[in-house]
Each structure stands twice: as C-alpha cells, then as structure tokens.
Length: 126
Length: 126
DNA sequence: TTATCATTTGAGTATCTGTTCAGGAGTTCG
DNA sequence: CGAACTCCTGAACAGATACTCAAATGATAA
Image 1: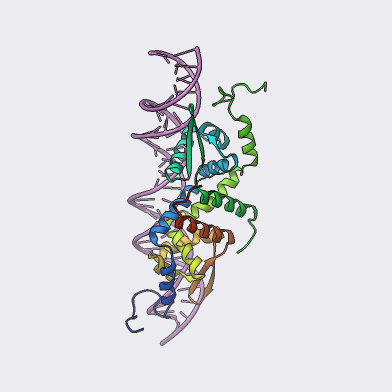
Image 2: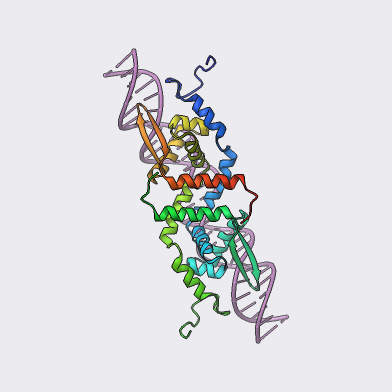
C-alpha cells in the first residue's frame, strides 16, 4: 500500500480500491456488457416486445398476422423483424408468398418468460 | 363465417384469423408490453448494464466507485442511476457523504444472471 | 404475360436518448 | 463560519432510432 497515493476521486477515506479491483475482475468485460446491452435494447421496444410475446404464444406467425396482432403497419413490423433476425433472435421460413417467423433463441425465450413473471408479481421485492 | 368479409390484409387465403384472435387473447396487453419494453430498455444501455452487473457482483457500491469501475464520469453514472432508481431497479442508502447503491429487484437480478448465461453459451440454439 | 399479394428495402424525418458542462444541494471537517 | 467532497440536477447538443412513404423483390394466379 505504498504507491497508492492520490490516483483520483474517493481517495480521502481510502475507498474500496480493493473491492473495485476485485469487482472489475469478476465482472463482465465492457464488450460483453455492450453485447448484453444490445440484446436488451432489442427487447426494449414496445413493437418488438409485442412481436416476441406473440411469437412466444403462437409459435409461428406470418408478417401480416403479426402486424394485425400488434396493430402496427406491415412495414414497421418488417423493419422490426429484420433487427431481430439479424441478431439471431427470430428465424423465418417461407411458405408461398408468406414468411413465417418464430423465436430462434432458447435464452431469449427464457428472458421473455421470466420478465412476464416479473410483471405479474410486480409488487415483489428483492 | 358470414360477416367475415374483407376486413383487411391477408384475407384472400382466409388467414389464421382464429389464431390471431386466440393469440391476442392470451397475449400480454399493449400496455403490459410497453412496461416490459420499458424494463428491457433500461437494461439496454452499455453504461447501465455495466453498473447493474457491477452491483450484481459487489452487492453494494457508492457512485464514485461505480464510476471508477465502469470508467464513466460521475455525472453520467448519476444520470444512469436516477433512471434505474426511478424504475425501482436499484435502491440507495446514504452513509456520510457517499451514497451506496444496490440491486432492488429479484426478477431483474435473475434477468441479469440469465442473460450472462446467454452470453457464455452464445452458440446454443433454441 | 400481367395482375395481385406478401414482404422487403431505402430515404427522409421527427423523436428519443446519453453524454458533457455548469451549477446547486447535502455532508463532513477545520 | 467556510472549504472540500460526494452526489444530483437542468440545459444543450450530437447521435441513435422507429416510424411513414414510395418503390422494389419474390411468389402465385389468371
């Protein structure tokens, strides 16, 4: 504890330098956090969320049915699905003129389930 | 099946009107989806995500330690924490001049755990 | 082929969002 | 009291984002 001196903020009371370092070690790296944030951001839009929960219930739906279910324009749905598809969250299958979408990631399915629980038990505290 | 007529799109091939209706019934309502999206959106930012994972590991940290851990300005951290606090995702406690933050929602803690799993098993398919 | 349907794409736009900067509020210590 | 410190707040700005509109693609049916 010699070279510690005054690196920057919080040094007066000899803060949790050790704790900060330890936390940073076990912590997800910044790039990992960025990827996780990317995932959450995709779920963080009402339209996309509704689409995903619809797929969670129905299993598979075509774009026009999704648009009708969520009450958004076909174009908006298509734009939303493209983002989800690029991220590997949904996958599609063509059948004639229609294209059917489905959830494509087990963990995302769990996130959707779990978050729905969160909503139903809103009052709970941790 | 008489009054069905031509409501709008997808009516030529007699689409899954029934499926759409059934899905919409069991589905989360638009306002529920909006609240869920709000939750995910809060997790969908790199800074906030890093803060939350740091709290998940450390249990409790003051603002300046969080800023140091995440390598972001105190002000940015404070803004981020305000959003999380307002949403009930984190809670704080004052001790002298410092304010210690902690996770305040069990479901969010589970979401963070689960998503971290998702990252580690990235290759998995659903 | 042409017409129609389901979906996609790209441009344009208005809105939202996260950061920085400057200043304020609350706490501790001399 | 005033100085130093931790944290919060509000304004302002740059960048991201989600929609609409117009046009294109791919597939089916006449």
